Image (cartoon, rainbow, N blue to C red):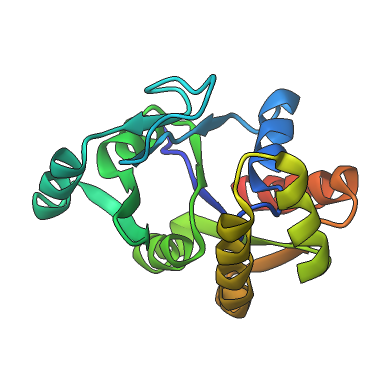
Amino acid sequence: MKKGSVIIISAPSGCGKSTIISALMKRGDLDLHFSVSATNRRPREGEVHGVNYFFLETDHFKQLIDDDRFVEWEEVYPGRYYGTLKSEIERIVGEGHNVILDIDVKGGVNVKKLMADRAISIFIMPPSVDTLRCRLQGRATDSSEEIDRRVAKAETEIGFAPQFDHTVVNDRLDEAVDRVHSLISDFVK
């Protein structure tokens, strides 16, 4: 059985990576299976353990780090951890499916280095920092202080874009989805 490929999608918060991934999954023609990330944050309303994230207690998350059970992990904000379990990638790729990773920018760079030519990395870029701020405000899920923190972090993360195989500006969602689809399609063939 042919092993699947690893598709890395990274972006600053609010750039639409989850929306793009959802649209790709709905198309259904790339045999994409979503890798569920782990986090120690509390679930937001409507989020389900094992579907949106593996919601872990901080001590458990740190133990998994110590046991080298993550392909990548990051303390994204002080005390807030996110990571991709090796077992998730191995399970999906081992079944012959393509695994799509929705991970933070530093994690995307690290996984690409680890997976090399088995992976394609795509950076989703906002049209501008001002547009990103408006999108985050439109979510109405974060305080103005949290939005300021996310925008400041995004400005730093944008500097990582050249380390990705491809950069796609998400100015018009349908065009961004088509471009990402084309990149993945060419890679998995």
